[in-house]
Amino acid sequence: MKQLLTKKKKPTSAHQNNPTNRGWRNIASTVAILVTAPILAIFITVFVFQSYEVFGLSMRNTLGNGDRLIVQKVSKNWSKIRGRKYVPQRGEIIVFSKPPSLSTTSDNITHLIKRVIGLPGDRVVVKDGSITIYNATHPDGFDPDAGQEYAKDILTTPGNVDIKVGAGEVFVCGDNRTNSLDSRRFGSISTDTITGVAKIRFAPVGKFEVF
Image (cartoon, rainbow, N blue to C red):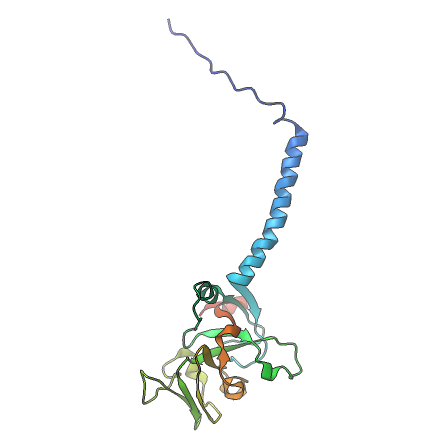
C-alpha cells in the first residue's frame, strides 16, 4: 500500500510578513531609484550622448533652425581614457565650444555646430569659391566636397584662406557656406573643444535622420 508523503511547508517568518518591514523595504527601493536615476542621467549626459538644439542657419540645408540632435560623446571620451588625441573623421558634423575670439559677440550661444573639412596636417586653401585640401596622400590637392550628399546645395565657398591645420586641430565649415561663421573666420579649432559628433536628428519627427 503506497504512502502519500506531504511536503511540509517551510514556516514563514513573522518578521518577513510584518507589514512595517515590507513598507520600509519599499521605501528603501524607492529612495535607491531616486538617488541612482539622476546619477545615471548625469553619467550618460557627460560620457555617452547628449541632446542639442540647432540655432541659426549655418548648416542649412543639412540642418535647420530648431532641429534636435543626439550628439555622441563615446568616441572622444574613449580616446581620452586611452590617453590618445581624439580626431573626428572628415565629413562628420561636430559640436564644439565657441572659440574665444567670438566671445564678444552679443548672444548666449556657447557651442557651435559645423562639418569637419580639414584634418591635422592638411593644408586648406579656400580660393575662387572652392576648397582644396593638400596633404601627403593628395599632394596635388582634392575637393573635400566632391561627390558628397551634403554638397549638392553648395554653389560657392567664399573666402581667401591658406592655412596648415596643426596637430590636434581640425578645420570646420558650415554647409551654408555663404552664411556661416567658421574656420574661414576663426581658424582651425582644437579637438579638445569638441563635445561630440552629431549622429541622429530626432526632431522634427518628419525629418528623423541618422548621420
